[in-house]
Length: 155
Image (cartoon, rainbow, N blue to C red; front, side):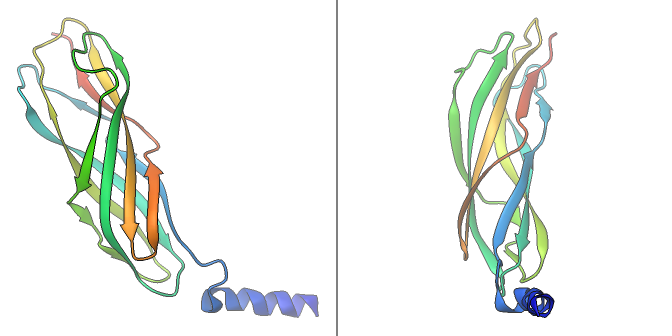
């Protein structure tokens, strides 16, 4: 009897929505970028991704993504603030929705800039990224599992 009940409950889970949810996991960003010597506010992109899983009975629309990046470590001749924090909207992301019962990897870019006058010792700043993802099923916050290193190779 208990076995039959568990079997019926197991069959009902995807249909009845028991335990169904939308989840974000495994956020990550490019590990490193080497700023070319002589750069002056040179733009570059930090590429990122977040894995999404939708076990809900309906498609989840991704309305927006915002990012906050903060320096968590510096070394060498770093000349900027040692605890700088910045952020803004991520406008270049795909896909814009995750269908019912599907998984997807949301891919995006975050615009960054760098300036390098050619340090004499290896210099870098490590950035931590946190993302706020607004969807049709709620708002989610996730921190990247790795840091992005803005590296200035010694000349």
